[in-house]
Image (cartoon, rainbow, N blue to C red):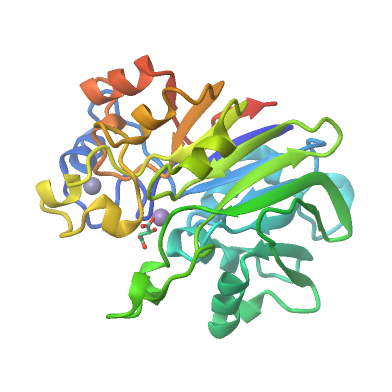
Length: 309
Ligand code: MLT
Ligand code: MN
Ligand code: ZN
């Protein structure tokens, strides 16, 4: 199974269009130790020819252009794409807006939770993915589902599970419990290669690592995990937004309650942070935070990184 990080950044990407934080400024000024990042998505293939996207970011057009494996192959006629299916982890802008890049009458399958499918249905702009060509399939919780699209069996299955988290910001209902969210509004995915049983986890949004999630992840071969923030309060401290990580549904990497500590005893073989926000000090390859993450066995995801399982 081949896995490629299409985008390792969080919503807004790095640099973010309107952001003047120290990281965004350093990157714009060409400082050493910084790399640009597009928004959150992975691509997976069992056969190297047919690909499943995990999330469809607003930067998808750029990501496809940067990824030779996702270009139409020459032996497939006037219109073709190796992208056969897309699985969505939630309804966030950074994870669904890229679906609009997949119009142009291309057959495809879109997998998501029932409530994210409802969101696509309620926003008629997504009807550009014509119903006769693009099938929309519900991802059940805790039951592996075989993935196919455009008449192709991808040789993959997805087991979706509820990730501790939150409803998309723009869907929040003021005053409602959990802002109107329900378990399953944010999914974690285990992607399984059918032929070998090999699997990895993709969890780009996670508010906390509870016992259930820890048990699920124990001993995993490879996990791509929510690396949005280093510190709970970093967006506030940097004067960017008046919001904590937990209010956004994102655990922080650092500190006693952070993901690095929570993973320390889980025996995960390869750990990769993705969905990294532009405010995160670990984006600087020369920072003490990067050194801490690296010493704990983490990779800080970069666009274009490839993995084989
Ligand atoms: C998030 O991950 O919290 C969201 O993508 C934030 C956003 O809407 O930009
Ligand atoms: Mn996001
Ligand atoms: Zn910034």
